[in-house]
Amino acid sequence: MKVWIAILTLLTFSMSGTYAQAKENRKQPPPVTAAAERQIWQSKGYGHIFEIEGPSVKVYSYTKDSLVPFGKGNIENNGDIYINEIYDNTKTQEQFNAPRFLMGRFVNGSLTDGLGYVQHLKRIDNLPKVKYNGFSKDPVQNFEVFWQSFEENFSFFPLVKVNWKEVYKEYRPKVGAATSEKELEDILTQMFQKLNDGHSIIFGKKGLIFSKSKVEREEFFMANSESMQRNVEDGYMKGAVKSKLDGRIVYGQTKSGGAYIKLIGFDESDPQKIDQALAEMVQDLANCRNFIIDMRFNEGGEDFFGLKIAGLFAEKRKLAYAKQARTGGYEQFSKPTQVYIEPGAKQFSADNIVVLTSPMTVSAGETGTMALKALDKVTIIGEKTCGYFSDMLLRLLPNKQLFTLSNERYTSPDGTNYEQRGLPPDEKIMIKQADIDAGKDPVMNRALELLKKKP
Image (cartoon, rainbow, N blue to C red; front, side):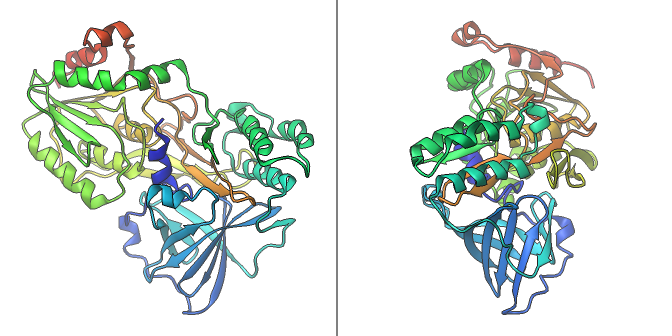
């Protein structure tokens, strides 16, 4: 997985993407706040506390035993909350040249993202009194906060069949006052790697540390992605391809006259830029009625980007998937928010649509595939996706070390959760090294056969 894409676009505290004003939010009034009134809001799930005083916002990561300052920012007149500084020791914002992050629009106890997904918060009188408060390099304190953050927020303990309380019993005795930073990091790594979770990451001083181990087919696609993409353009396309959004979208016509659309990533958060690029693509491919959508190399980003792709083919409003967050015990989640595909302002007239997937289809690439799968005339072929659906919940330890975890659950329209299992294709087709070396692509070949079907 190209984790930098996911981190850059998902640093907004497990939001589905940077706020793009949803239709239902346009009717909402601005926040009811006195100019200098101090307000404290605690989220239901997510482990956030917001301290708002006038235009200033302080954000805390909390558990039942801990309260750690996370960052500071501001709230605009329309309720948009920005984080201008994260207190992490790896200076993530500087790495990404991102001076501030937009968390969402806060209106009277609700924080809404670009999908229309709402985090609910309750107002409290004071910051909680907790056992561990503020910053500290104490190894025991950092261990406890790390373990408790997963205990309260991680969504998939029953799925991964890991007894997190037994993990505590195993590793807690290994941490003491004399434990070094490196030793503590190694212990935390061993713990969370038992979860094998695609969106759980520790920001180590020497780089990113992953919970999930790569599988053979994922490594195969990553090693061969450039050759596979070159084979498609050299062997299956009629003329040169066009590129939009700095290569995130590549498209053209196949030799048989159909449309080929390759979606490399959804890491663009500006809806206007996306709409403009899609409108130009619709115009360029207006004469096509059969479509191949290649999601095999899509490494994630913004969920709403994938919905816009599905909207190019949607004849009516249709359920794409549902999303919910963990709010209590291991099986306690918020009421599912149904996320819909809306017909786009610009659309294709399609007879057949074939979507190609692989183990490199990740995160927002997977939710985008799920949205496309909900449409009529769509067939998914290739291999199952990677299985990273939940957004990243970003947390800060008392020693200012960042980490992420999965705290949400996405389900298909029929209620199926594909986390860690991956979204299976309608028809499984494997590509081998010999195919790639010979310039062939059996998945493309099968897609072209399927496009010959009469509607």
